[in-house]
Image 1 (cartoon, rainbow, N blue to C red):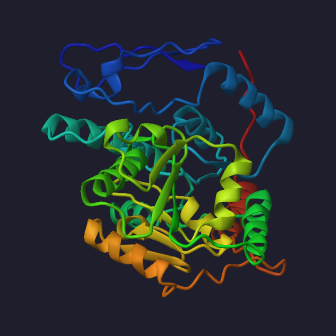
Image 2: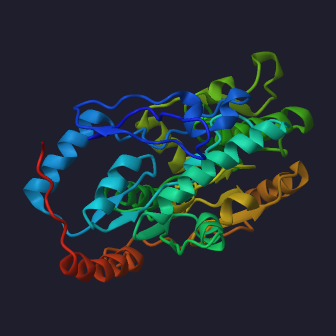
Length: 360
């Protein structure tokens, strides 16, 4: 069962939709979802992860397992959400960010750019409304969507499992390691525009003003070796690029601090929830800290070189204490938001069980 291209008739205010049984999805005209794409192209697709093959597989899963609740971690599943709604199957949406505003390109000073983004956001918001619960890992987004009238909750991202074990093992190993005074790590994937913008901005500030006396900064992560032209890299800045995990871990055993510059974008930087467990002081843009749960071990600074220079100097003088972390086995991983959502929705699912659809 797929949505066929809209047929517009003269005098009608909205398109008439024909639906037919098929095993493939007919692609709509690229301008049909967002009329502003004629002047500015966006990459938002409400059905990016609702492929025809997956829909067939998903229908089979529903028939085989008869679930009470479905949890999605991405909003680009419009057909899945619609299918669940038709079957009275509660959907909990836990997106990593607002996909309609996900800046795959740098912002442009163009009113059509903003119109196109807002149209995508409105389309995504309509999907939010069709879900039973909405949980966001950023306080900013939870508050924003709630402010628009769609009840939302903050569901903080926390390091667990192998990631937490690795961070805690580094913390323990640092107790026996020799910390290199003035060694800072600049960690991030520069190919992603919002992160690359922050990394590049800080590298440019270092190239313009010079590093604090005695400081060395090693930039690691995809495309960080391309942050600056080779002839503009200042003394003390090592643009290393992608590194093996073992090399990164070795650097973290010696580093005196980690730098996390960030100037725009949505979602929450997961490394701000992971890296404090290593006990390494984190200097981060104040903007990046607005959406996260805890500031333990994180020192927010304004996006001016004067503030970054001052913070790095404080770390080098040991006036900033490391994070106390949460590395004992007895720590409680709070998941009250998702537990509460499931507990509230399961009774609803039992009261209104979906009827299995028979294929024609």
